[in-house]
Length: 88
Image 1 (cartoon, rainbow, N blue to C red):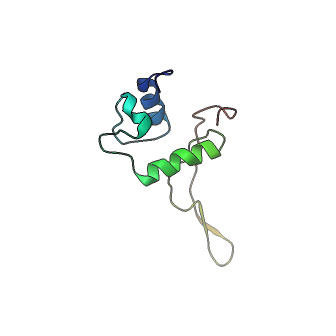
Image 2 (image 1 turned 135 degrees about the horizontal axis):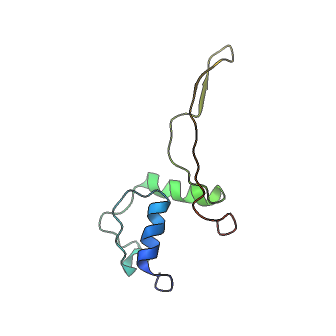
């Protein structure tokens, strides 16, 4: 945290999709957040790393197909590249 700067880490967390308040304080390295982040936000952040750096956010079902194979709903998934694939 201190090498890259706590404010840079807080900014990156926002790029990852965290909506919780994250202060640029060195204590964030130890989980020292005012309110903490939700399990859904943490899952999304880890999924982004596992998805080669493309942001993953919670979404409704991607596709719903009826019993005849007809697509009745399809969600468009947007996955912006947050960090490089090599870093992820």
